[in-house]
Each structure stands twice: as structure tokens, then as C-alpha cells.
Image 1 (cartoon, rainbow, N blue to C red):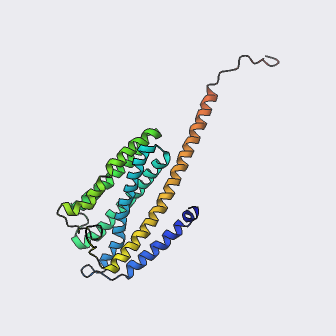
Image 2 (spheres, rainbow, N blue to C red):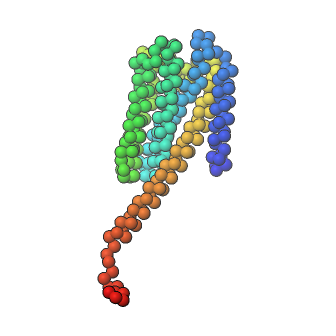
Image 3 (cartoon, rainbow, N blue to C red):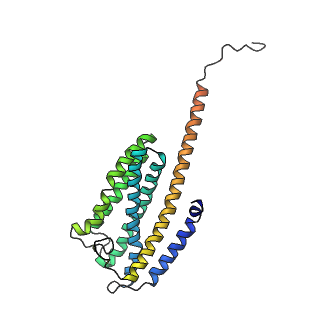
Length: 244
């Protein structure tokens, strides 16, 4: 396990390089041409947002059951990475939508629900920062993380439930994927590459959170020691020295 963790970053870099190279050499779309190559980064970013918030959901449920700091750190770290991937999804979608739809933004159900999910999880992170007590913070964040996950299926199903400009699902849907097999293989390669990047970011953020907690605990202990020394009662039983 330690060996795998040590090699995770170079594996992620190599996977991203292979995925992007495959995306550049994949056949162009019949209608959109080379513009369609944005799919190979836009879709994996969206899927990783789903995965990130699913991990936050699972870790939040686990914390409500086990009440362990490790699960709280996992939930928080995955939410932060998920917000990053959600923001990346929105930006890439706007870049793709401008030449296709003629606008950077439209009130499409998929875009609106994705933006709402982005701001809800920003609220999750803000809640964590606004709560100082670790136990209270973990409890509130766990409840929030469980409830917020309801948005993920809403985002995914929005193009099916409501009329939308955004195309319906081509892979995560009932039946066979409606995409060329070679394009699907390249897409899956990039999904794996993005997943490796997610694992690297998640590991780094969890380690940073553990270090922050250790530093905070050390500072609290030092503050308590100083406060104890400041209020220590004088020793009146001590004998006075010469000349006093």
C-alpha cells in the first residue's frame, strides 16, 4: 500500500499524458469536428465531481456511525476536490458551449443544477470553516454532506427530466453507450487518468488536514501550559533569601 501511494503521482502524470495524447489522436466528431475533443476532459471532470461527492456522502455516513476523525478528514478533503472538479466542469462546458450554442451560459437545466451543486458544496466548506469546535464541525458537516448528495442524481438526470439544450447521457444510461467504440475507449482512459489525479489530490489534502489538526492540538497544548503557568499560585511557604 505504501509503495502504491509513493508511485501514485507519477502514475497520475503518465495516465494524464496518455489520456491527452489519445484525445488528440482520436477521430474527430462528424458534426463538431475537433471541438468535440473537449469531451475527453469535460466529461471526466464531471464524473469525478460525482465521485468526489459520493465519497463525501459515504464518509459522512461513516462518521455519523463511527465518529472517527479520519472519516471527517476524508469527507472534507473529497468535498474540496469535488468543488474543484465541478468548477472545472462548468468552465469547460462554457468553453464548449460558446461555439456550439452561441453563448457562454444559458439557463439550461444541466447547467443550472450543476452551478447549484457547486455553490451548495461551497456552502459545505464554508460551514466547516465557520465552526470552531471539531466535534460540532464534524457533526454538522456530516449531516450537510449526506443531505447535499441528493443533488448529484438530480444533476445527472436533469437532461432526462426536463427539456434541455445539453445532450442526454451517452454512457451512464440504460442500454448500450451511444458513442463510437474508439471514442468510448479514449474517454474511459481519460476517466481513469482523472481518477488518478483525484486520488493524488485527495491524499495530499488528507495529509494536510492531519498536519493542520496536529498543529492546532500542539498550539492548544502550549496555550494551556502558558495559561497554567500564568495563574500558578505563589509559593508563600518558600523561605526568603538573605537580605530580605
